[in-house]
Amino acid sequence: MSENEYDIVIVGSGCAGPAAAKKAAELGLKVLLLEKSQKPGEKNVSGTCLNMAALVDPDLQYLMKGPIEREIYEMHSYMITPERTTMFRETPSEGIILLSIRRDVFDAWHTDMAKKAGAEVKLSTTVIDIIEENGKIKGVVTDSGDKYYGKMVIDAAGVNSIVGRKAGLIPKRKGQNMILYTILNVHLGEKLVDERFGNSIYYFLSPNAMHKTWAWAFPKREVVTFGTGGYMDDELFKDGITSVNDYMQNLIDLPVIKEKIEGGKIASWGLHLEFDEAIERRTRDGLILTGEAGGFVIPFLGEGMPEAFFTGIYAAESAKKAIDANDFSAEKLEEHFMERYQENIFLQGFRYVADLNKKSILTKTDEEIAEIMQNVCIGGGFISNAIHTLWMKGAEEDNMDFVQEAKDFYEFIQPYRQVGSETIEIYKKMRAQK
Image (cartoon, rainbow, N blue to C red; front, side):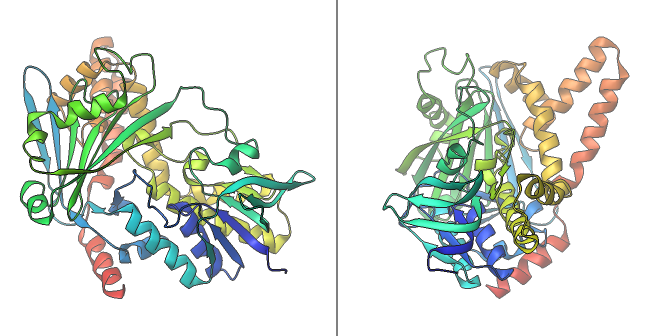
């Protein structure tokens, strides 16, 4: 195998890329991980909390060793309408709900973990094209003209990855089934973050502060990240809203937030686009798409990082099977990959929750959503919207099937709202090993 030839070439060092590179190296493969930035995660404005319900999976437990900004124990949900403000506070009896992180720090650590496992890493390397021979993806071309060949290529380069697009797997965006987020980081210093936010995350539903999604505040050590935006439909820009930045301005102007960030300084302000629809194909001969590139994110629940971690690992395992069998066909890659993906209860559960919520949310105005949330609230608001919608539909149509569906859904989500002592023991063990 020559200098520029590898078993696997992986493009992108966000969440999926390092997970894939680490797993592939551990499986004994020669791995190259390419990243366009000088430092992994340095330009990332999304993804700020790790879900403990996912991290307890044996495949992801090592991530608990990473650089953590804050342990999150509570959720505060604000439903704000002109008539009133309603706040719900959820505190599990024990355990950690989320781990707050900084992507510029965490992604760099994760990439270093892949490197320590044996993967070669090249930063400041932008992929501009793919190498294709007889219908099989054989490698990639960089902006410096270098060519890197792999028996397998794993695309982990995000929603608009050049690899997936050149391979014909990522479709041209049509302005539909997309959510555009704006992310704001406010520096307050550790003392003020402790006093004003503590170890809690905050969700907000308020007309003109988001559109058919939710807004949030996630505290780090010295910085608080605010996020909001909207589903890209015909109603995204209305009532004086000309850009998603207007939603952010309206959000931080809410009295409940304005007082919490008084004296703070804006550290960064950025945009992030998420495509909210599964793409038709995620494999070609010699190629697997993961994370956002593969359409595995769940924008309606603010989920994306666990999906990327898992799919990166599954892609590496599928690539190893393909190399061992010398069969790089899209069909076999899809078969190996989806077998692992479909047996993951966390991934399937959250996809089910998201699909049911999306179906109900898109039928309502932002005002209706906020008012409904004031009446019933579970898991930040959106989950209860699906349950409440089914209850009301059953009552209005005198159809107990809808009521039963709501009850089944409510029972289904209960395990995902519990964080028990076993999780804490795993967390303590991982932190002791870092």
